[in-house]
Figure 1 (cartoon, rainbow, N blue to C red):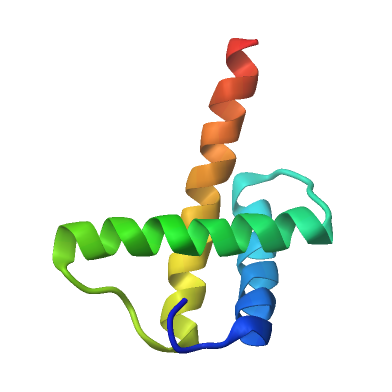
Figure 2: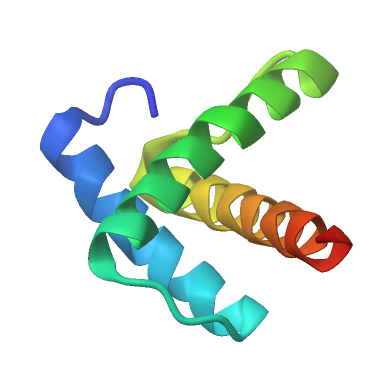
Length: 84
């Protein structure tokens, strides 16, 4: 989440984690939503940069990227839990 700042990254991460939680029909707490949103943004920004050479800008673009990344992390976590 380049150029947004720490506080806005946490706010966007929390919002993205909450949206991903609703999309994936799971239930997490605020702290886990923030972690999923921020890590999701880092991972999906890396993927976008590797594939397209750039990423989405602004806080709305980063909210979209963080939400998709958090959904990917939730899906991966669900797949790992199913194997146990």
